[in-house]
Image (cartoon, rainbow, N blue to C red; front, side, top):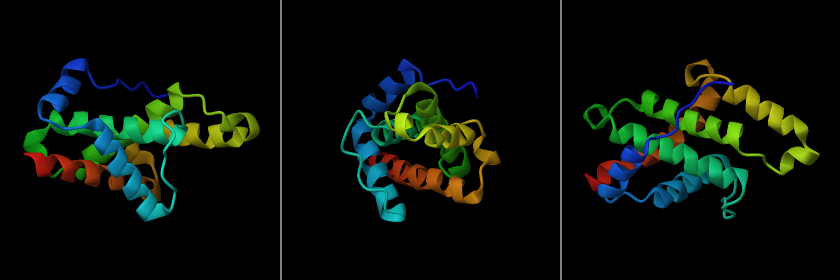
Length: 141
């Protein structure tokens, strides 16, 4: 298991102070992933998909807010997205694991890899969210 530190309360407060709504980032990320991969929309806030999108978006928002002078670093933002997704894997027990334990194993295998260790195909999923969140922030600055 990789050690992943969630965004600080101070950083989360900065996000809100800038008028950025993390729930909107979650929604936009969900829509972008559905558009690119046909995942379907995550409407249940208690589902893995929703929580993963929320954490991925929040980690990206936090990283971007702390690095506003480097808004062209898509790979770093995408790495933060992957950390948010991995954090969800480590801290959320999906009920789907009861009937499909291999799902947990495959998620853990991805979560245990750094962003740079992922295949390009897996990295692109993180980039989809990073692009949407980055554009959302650019639109508000």
